[in-house]
Each structure stands twice: as C-alpha cells, then as structure tokens.
Image (cartoon, rainbow, N blue to C red):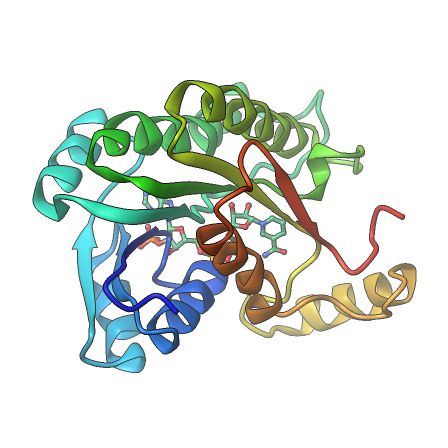
Length: 233
Ligand SMILES: NC(=O)c1ccc[n+]([C@@H]2O[C@H](COP(=O)([O-])OP(=O)(O)OC[C@H]3O[C@@H](n4cnc5c(N)ncnc54)[C@H](OP(=O)(O)O)[C@@H]3O)[C@@H](O)[C@H]2O)c1
C-alpha cells in the first residue's frame, strides 16, 4: 500500500512511533525514524531491519530541525510521536521551568517540525501530530499535559487550512502500555484498567493503525482521531 512512499517518524525509536515504523515498513514504505539518541535509534533499527534509516534530531532546536530536513530531502508523510519528560505534579507545585521545557519539546517541537518540514512534503502528503486524551478532560496532576495536547490539536486544525493540499491531522491516544514493566507500573495498570470500558490499556500497535489510516486517507485533514478504548465515553 505504501510502496514508493517515504515516511518520516520523529519519535520513532520507541513506543507508538516505533509501532508506526513497523507497520509502515510492513506496508512497503521507505521509513526514516528520528529522535535525539543515536544509541536508541540504532537499537530500534536493529529490530526493525535493514530497510529502515535513522537520523538524529532534537525537536527542541530550530537549527537541529532545519538541518534534519535538509538531510532527509523530499518525502511523503511525517508523523511526530515525541514524548518529553512530562510534568505530572499538581498545578501549584509544578516548577514552571520544567513545564516550559516539556512544552518546548512536545508542542513547539511539533510546530517546528511542521514549519520546517512542510516545504519537503509532496503535495499529496501529510503531517500527523500526536496529542493525548488529557486534551479532552482534566486529570489530577496533568494540567500541563492537557494544555500541550489541546494546543497540538488546535495547531493541526489551523495549519490544515494553510498547508492544504498537504493534509494535517492529529492522533489522540488514550492510556497506552509503552513503558518498561516495573512493580509500580504494574500496580498503576491494575488500578487503571477497571476504570476503562475495555478493561485494559491500549498497546502501541493499536494506536499505530490510526497513523497509517491518516497517511492513506486522501480526504482526512484537520481532524483528530481518538484511539482510547472508550476512556472518555
Ligand atoms: N503512552 C501513553 O500512554 C500515551 C498516552 C497519550 C498520549 N501519548 C503521546 O504519544 C506520544 C508517544 O508516546 P510514547 O509513550 O510512545 O513515547 P516514548 O516511547 O517515550 O517515545 C518517545 C519518543 O520521543 C523521542 N523524543 C523525546 N524527546 C525528543 C526531542 N526533543 N526530539 C526528538 N525526539 C524526541 C524519544 O527518543 P529520544 O529519547 O532518543 O529523543 C522517543 O523516540 C507522545 O506524544 C505522548 O505524549 C502517549
């Protein structure tokens, strides 16, 4: 389905981005995964196989993003699945500096990637951002995450108008099991699962399907695809 398509995934060295890379490769695409750590990228590429290429980029830096796209050249689809260290303290206790740094990587990172990348994307290509269900309702201790996810969705709708015919969309995941298993994590999952209609967290490959849908569907732009197992029903 994606033969002869070049797909760039920033945040592709782990989690949801890695699953998008796997599915895009299986669908025949040429795939470039990018993130800050060469080591993480090489480990991911080893698993993904010979056809994947890697590129180092830091989405917090204009220079790094501009240089990255000069190296990549023209391509078809961009997915951004960056997750910085997300602040999860109470609003009054959170350090403003760490909130601003997280916003800089996740929201402004997506902004920079779209801004510098658009000129390299084919006219029938697309950009897919990632938000998260904290954009849709408040969660205790996640005010900054709510704000950056809502800002991401608003940005994608606004620039879908300006960048057309390039399509711009957002995938909004619910709770996804992408973190390494620890006893604390296992307890968190045990408590969280019964609060969800499907009684479990999602897995990265279930979220990845939404990116492939948005790459392929030529009439979807300015939209948000929520994949959350019914978490915000
Ligand atoms: N997992 C969930 O439950 C969940 C729920 C809702 C929304 N989301 C959203 O889904 C997205 C993916 O989450 P995930 O759990 O799959 O994350 P993840 O496994 O932690 O992967 C994050 C990726 O972002 C890269 N990255 C971080 N900062 C970067 C930067 N400044 N520049 C370039 N790359 C950077 C990381 O690689 P390096 O460290 O090498 O840079 C890594 O490849 C995030 O936007 C997250 O907020 C996740």
